[in-house]
Length: 211
Image (cartoon, rainbow, N blue to C red):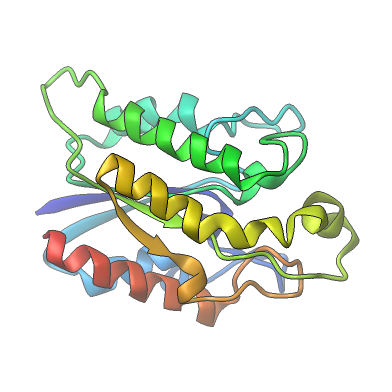
């Protein structure tokens, strides 16, 4: 059976803005992928709230730097047949990636490089890599989330094209979340249950041919 590793942030974790809290297990997008690939792949959800592609967040109680954490996570779950990287939204915070999609794209490209060059003790190699560009942000009345992300709502519409370019250059597959789901205006960033399930369906469709 193949192993699919989903490496992401709060959208992968299943953050529910309505709580705030966490979506039911069955509504989280990695769970939807697991349901669709049942019997063909083992789907591992490695989602962390606030995780960036490759940038430090010194305001956080845990390490959110994806580039620093990815090698350990790869070693934990190897062999990894398909790596799904779903990161970038948190790079738009000014105190992490600086607020531009360009930094997220640079970070994602670095993660691909890390995955492909990972020195496995067992000579395992990461197989296919799928990049999931984040959904665009939307305006919100939530003061905290508006303070963190409000400056980059327009910038977030660049995610799809930027990640498509990275995917082309690196030979990865690409799923544009913005084609399949819309962020909730409750906080402007996260997905409600229906939209996170829709994202899972789209990712599953991309993975089926890879198995």
